[in-house]
Length: 153
Image 1 (cartoon, one colour):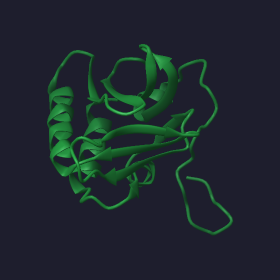
Image 2 (cartoon, rainbow, N blue to C red; image 1 turned 90 degrees about the vertical axis):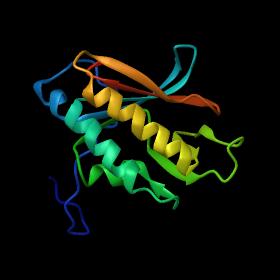
Image 3 (cartoon, rainbow, N blue to C red; image 1 turned 135 degrees about the vertical axis):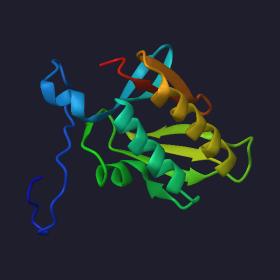
Image 4 (cartoon, one colour; image 1 turned 60 degrees about the horizontal axis):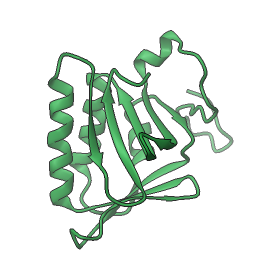
C-alpha cells in the first residue's frame, strides 16, 4: 500500500512493460493490452485460481451499471497492468451489439447479463482445471479478451 495526496491508501499499479518475472508476479492478477496478439488486439488477463476467483466475484456482482472493472478488482487483489489504463464494463441491451472496444488505451466491454453469466461459467472452468489453460471470454468488437490460468506469464 502507498500513501497518496488524498490520504487514501491505494494498491500500486505498474504501468510500464515488464521484461522479467519476479516472485511477486505469482501473487498478482495481470491485465495486459497487446496489439496484434493472436492476430487481434487483445486484453490478456492472467492469474492463479485464487485471482481468477476474485475476477469471478466482481463479475457476479456486476448488475449492468457502468463501472471500472480495474477499480473493482483493485479493491480485492493486487494488479499488474501493462498497456491498459482502464477496462470499463457497460451493459449491452442488444445481444447483437456487444464486444470489446479500444478507445486509446481505455477498453470498453459491452456485455449483457446473459453474456456475463456465460463468462462466469468459463471462469469456473478455468479455476477448476488443474493444468495451465485459457479461455476466450469475448471475441466480438475490435478487441478480444483472453483469460488464462497460469499461462502467458
